[in-house]
Image (cartoon, rainbow, N blue to C red):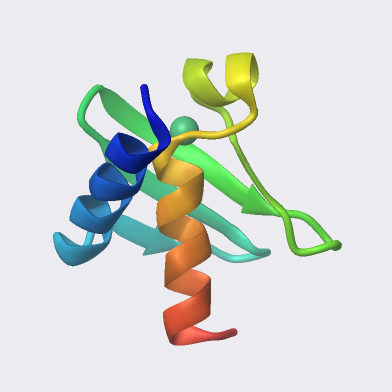
Length: 74
Ligand SMILES: [Zn+2]
């Protein structure tokens, strides 16, 4: 998926409130194809357990959480 499409999807996830903050810097993200767990590592990076992230190191869920963290801080 091209990056601009991923960013569009990330915006949609954010606007629809599909991010649920859990304890310990992790998040449930409800995507189009399932719910994934996104975690923020100590160096501030975000990791997702969806197949796209595992393959490419980036996905709409991790981007959505990055944006969420920018907007809502910690
Ligand atoms: Zn993902």
